[in-house]
Length: 107
Image (tube, rainbow, N blue to C red; front, side, top):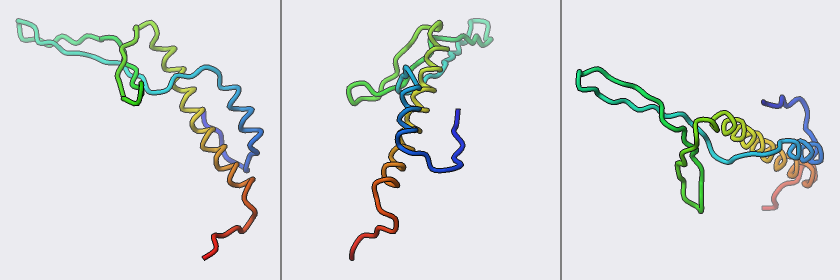
């Protein structure tokens, strides 16, 4: 869900949109498959529990989640990506709103 930038939005509008995002889950989620060679030489493929990759206590970890929770985890991580994009836009709006036009660093 991307917002098309047609004009610069105010910080208040961006903050209001951030409040509407709702629940989120930082990180990314992926499905995982395994392969096993059978005694007859054929290859068996099977799906294992999906993994959530996120930072916990400053360390990046893979956390297994139940297969039934995969769809919800995908939705929540998409909300997190949306929130991060809105935060970047908020930072740009703060710079635009709080610096006078043509402001330059003195040499």
